[in-house]
Length: 617
Image 1 (cartoon, one colour):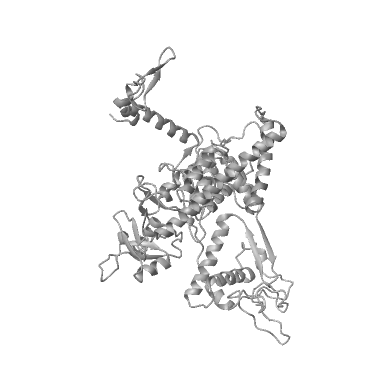
Image 2: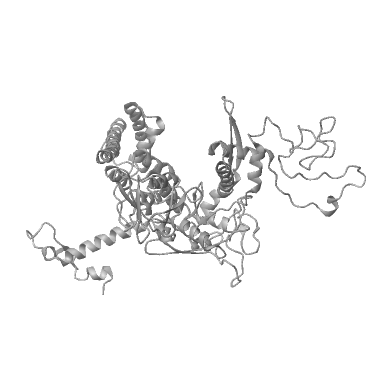
């Protein structure tokens, strides 16, 4: 195992050396460009600097393509990262040299942060690549809150990257809302035909709607699979989706009273509704059904070409009758979203259907006019002192670049939400909210208050809410497909059926543990220690809910650096070897600027002490 880990570290360090070589190449290209333009040693104007920089990048990309055989896209990524600035590049290079990330992770970071400004992108880089535990993403911390040693699991890196980007993007409330409005307006569906006889149907729409639809399809597929269907989950998902789109129906609003009765001048009675969308009506002598199975055609006028209730054997998926029984038995889809309560107190959401602002002052929610393009006052029209559920500014000014609150939708296809997106979902009809009480010290779930559930169901929900994802290393499988495991086996080993002995595991790690290849143990804080078949030992912690709560401004890093500098000065001022400032007494000495502006030996008399800076009495 040591040799394998060393190969991984060496590979990441090779990527760091590649970036160093590209940096040298860019410097050489810049010299060549300046020489050709006769600007060596000249002070460039801002416009000249922009022109030179653009030309250097284009030439550097071409040189990388020729030297390494990279595609133009890959060469542009490498040159862009190397040219990103000394601080960001330093964070990336250090992480590569430590063997924590790979070039593909760095490229993913660069792509996902393309919409952020330089300050916000740097905040994300500190969370993913920095060495400060206070600004690091929660996935990088061990159960004691210290930085882990070793490579990032790819799934954890992707989740942390998505969360940090969404948290930074959500700081610009108006801009993020406008971006979502434009995205909702671009919803679409398309079909692509392939030469092998298959085709792909793609649907783009509001994330909550598409994910909820996907969850319903996934649930149906899993029920069919557990019932013994020989098709794979992928095949079943495809067949269920096709069955729903071809034969699924939904109830429309009831017609007006006068439209419910048949026309007195028509001799044809109303057609009865079918019991199932897959039911085929009986046929008469001419082969046409006497009763429409879909309830949409007049008697005697139903035909296979026009009636949606008649199954076409060519179009229908395999075993449609079985699919129909499972689909019709499924309850309504529920989307579980974790959000900090403060996200529901800020700003106003917009409707994902019409892309207009939702008015939350009236119940139920109604659609009001879109934001005006111009005018002297875009603020709330509420009179001063008028009561409101949320007395807030509907059009707040863009916040400073930084990291704000963020939510997460759980399930088979989890995704992160900005505060505005979370507020949209909170206002949907039928939304139910449950409290999640979290320990602020380490982000562990302490309590999940739910009423009217049996004790065993409540315990399962509590454990799933505490773990959220599989506890084994690198897995992001949620409770929809995971399994609860008695870490200390129930029965012969005396393991209790309780929260302190249950953990959410993906199926394969659960099988490894059951077969004796992996050994698991659960600590008092529910920290899970996994020992693999080759004696690799990894400890994971419960889901850290603090990841949704951190708020950081771009100035926070500068403040932390300034505090570190002041603490260093104060500590040196208390050290007898440095505070006297005598030449030859030591390598490090302390000085200060006197009233006359001259540099003097020794600490400044008014500089705060260590106790003052640390807040000690």
